[in-house]
Image 1 (spheres, each protein chain N blue to C red):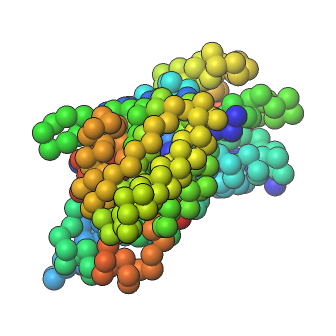
Image 2 (tube, each protein chain N blue to C red):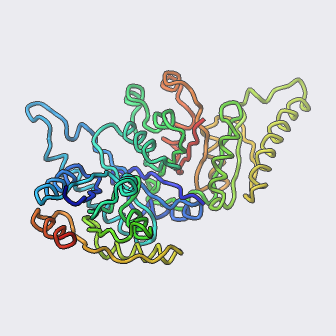
Image 3 (tube, each protein chain N blue to C red):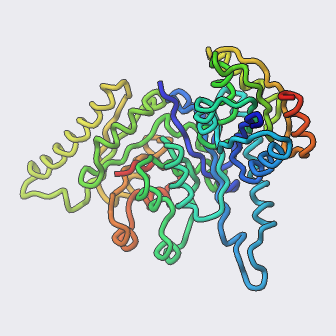
Length: 290
Length: 130
């Protein structure tokens, strides 16, 4: 089996080495190569009034990152894993995309960098921007909740939120089969919009439910054929709220969603479900590009 | 023409330093930025010595060393490991790979911890190449 690569993006605040350790079970899915990336924001070293470029600060930040990565790499090397490192100055999105292209990465793991609405509008969300520019699944890993709970082994029991109008299901299924050795059970939820449940009779309305259930069952079959226990769920209402509810009810370890594939400007104005889940859900969120 | 020394390191400053040391001591440097590039060069122009970093993008020095030392036609090329990674880790990681079923490989000829003085590096090269 070919060794897969995981790109672990860290600013040494949101994701620490214990977060990476909690993904240990990914070795069963052939992830045997970890590439570390630390991006030093340009604003921390670039010119500001009267000071010029802070070369010594760049050297200091690079060496701090290097010391941490050497420590982490030593652990992983001794366990027989392959390790690589990038420490770069620049934009997070650009450096992630560049590392993905250079290395041929199979999974990106990063924390979420919260922005307010105005910042989000002007500079966009790093997560949605990365998803737009790569075809690699991205795990927004909220390893520790604000209450201090940890979310290890996110692939163990994920909740897959699907919208057959937006997400290419074959892409999602194909991508998840790569993780079949670490997924014990998958819950699949579709959230119907309230206005979709309509008809002149109860029978007509129920036909719509039956149709949705049928599609969910078909999706479950795909997973079960590959040895993954799959459970369908149909919810109705606001997608974001209902997905969170479903995740709680199923005791999911992670939410998986496809990206919408919306254009940049539409994304900025109306937002996307995957972006919202990545930003707001307490659970780790795996986004699979369209 | 001097003997060829292949320098494999992702850090440009370290590459420049090693090139300078090699040239000043009468050797011809070949240069690669990672293990993958290093192996490509070795297959085209087998060097007389390799100075190899460990923690690099694309392919680490651990993997490149293993590839080199398990190749019948290349395994006698001497290697100096020049890295921030501890020697103990290098040895253990090779042992770990052997436990997973890979071939056993010998320890590197010399192991230097970064940073090194020019004289220490020059002496190490001379020790192995004369």
